[in-house]
Length: 116
Length: 109
Image (tube, rainbow over all chains, first blue to last red; front, side, top):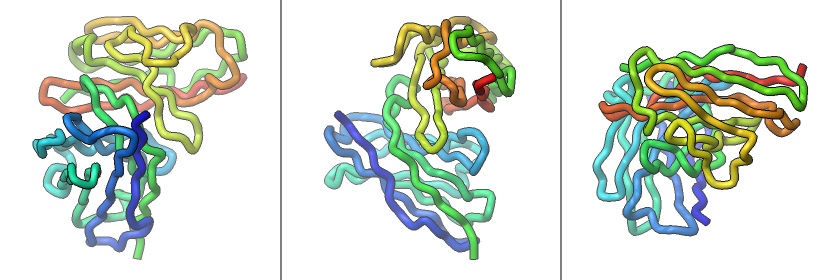
């Protein structure tokens, strides 16, 4: 049974870069698509982007200038970096496995607060 | 860019009642790429329906999806207490990007 676990700092200062990693266990990261999604407190879901295990990516146009998703197949991990963060980037960040356009397995999520 | 509008925003029903949730797209969507998720407080979303009408693994048959074009529906035939949650529709477009609706909260009346 594939499981996903997000990890990374829970607090990031404004203007800095948010960095999170998702560790895939119970299965191989290849060959699959993986995605990041976020949810501000009390609000809905926002797709951030996805990556194929070979490294090809696709991002939400609204975040494209600030986001980078990468994969490390040797560690069975993929990561997201979001630069120049503001309070509006405060959210629960989820990683998920993407199959056929659908998010079939989700991590439990990790809360990231942007504050000085 | 496709916009998904979910209605109603909140649905107040009693256990045993039927719930009908709507997801309307700003332009035609391929049924193959329309999904529904359930999210309970403090939990990650869970895939319920994909391809507009196919239930994901382990999803009870009281959940059903239907629709085509711009109008899609999630129906819960008889609400159980564990079904009170927020439901999101999601579309995978040709761009290709993923888009979520704003969600419908199903609460106990």
